Structure formats: C-alpha cells, structure tokens
Image (cartoon, rainbow, N blue to C red; front, side, top):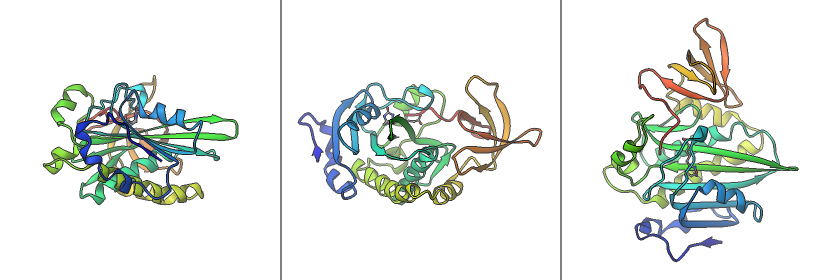
Length: 275
Ligand code: BTN
C-alpha cells in the first residue's frame, strides 16, 4: 500500500514515478510524509503493525546522524528509512551492507561513489550520503531500522554552512542539474535488495569484498577517535567480516575498531557528520 498525503510538497514532482521505484512486493506499507521528526522513528513504530515498511519524508525536523549528531534534512534531499522485522541476531554488518548498497546505487547513476568507514558515501572527497542503522530486540524478534540520507537536490553551500565537521557534496551540484529522487531511490533499493537475501543466508563475503573495493579508507593513515578515548594514529588495513575496521597502530599491533570516528589525514575530514 502506498500512502500519499494530500499535502505533499510542490517540489515533490520528481516523486511521480515512486511506484515504479519500489521493488515488487518489498514492502507491506509505504509512507510518504511532507515532514517528519525522523523517518527512523516512524519506521520503528510502524513495525508494530507490519513486517516491512518504507518511510520517506520531504524534510526532517530532528534528523539523526551517527553518534547522536544532528543530520541536516532540508527539502530536496532523499531522507528515508526501511523498517524490517527480522528473526535473526547478528546485525553488525547491516550498516556496511547499506553503505555498499547506497554507493552501488549511485555508481549505477554514473557517480564515482566510494565508502569511508563505516558507511559514509563520498564522491570526489565530499560526503553525499550517510547511513544510520538502529535495532531493537523484542523477545524473539529483532526490529531493524535502516535510515538513509542522500543529499540530492540541495545547494551545497546551504549544507556546508550548517555542517562544520565534514566536507559535504550534493548530487545536483556534482551532476550540474537536479535529479529525480525517485530514480535515486530506485537504484539504492535495488542494490539493497540484491545484497539483503544473501546476507540473510549468512553470506558476508559479497558485502565485505564489495566494501573493500569501494573503500577510500583502506591503506590510509588515519586517526581513530573512539568514544571517550584519546585519538590514536593508525593505518587502516582491512575490514573484518563483522564490519569492524582492522588497523595497525604505531607499534605495529593489529587492533579492531568497532565504532568511532575516523579522521583521514590527507582529507582533513572528520567523517560522520553530514546532511
Ligand atoms: C550519518 O551520520 O552519516 C547518518 C545519517 C543518516 C540520516 C538518515 S536521513 C533518514 C533517516 N532518519 C534519520 O533521522 N536519520 C536517517
């Protein structure tokens, strides 16, 4: 069921083909909203009554990014969440899988999209998309909410004035013209649902291998800023099957980074913020 509200914004003309954008039978319910606090919260609530939901909003007033940071979500962007009710446990690779799907979707559209660990999608050094996966376990069921934000038809200057910690990019500025967001959505969902069934069967290597190929992080000298810890210099050497980053510290000791921010020295970026 596709629910299209009457008050859908005027600039949503590029949603005309939304029905065609959706993989056949992928969702029980699709909700399009002119404005939402956070599509992740709506998707999570919707999982009380359905198994698979897609929630899109024209803008978000309380868009959330990684590490509890704010995610700028003005009109013109693609802000959406997939709510998936799952039976299984190990979800650590889902953020990586989602980053790969977004990058591959954008690559199909001709953008040279790459991944900065864990799942920042960058084009020409600027962050064009971010992923926030939130999970909750309720008895024998696990609710997975996959939130994706893509800077599509937005003026980069508008975003950059509000996002101080990373260099941002927008697809319209990169392409030189506005893009139909339904098409961007379609490519990302198709890539996501190519990977998802294989991951559900327990196959992690297609995701991990693809991430390695698209990574701008591997081989880089980085600074790892863990939660509450001192920043540490290291070299990123691999992605482990659970999605953690394998690094060699200055003593040559291998360590795994499960969460935190990366600062890549050549870019001078501080990764996870964006919008
Ligand atoms: C990041 O910090 O890189 C993650 C950003 C994720 C933003 C998306 S927009 C749709 C969904 N709703 C939210 O509140 N956040 C995610």
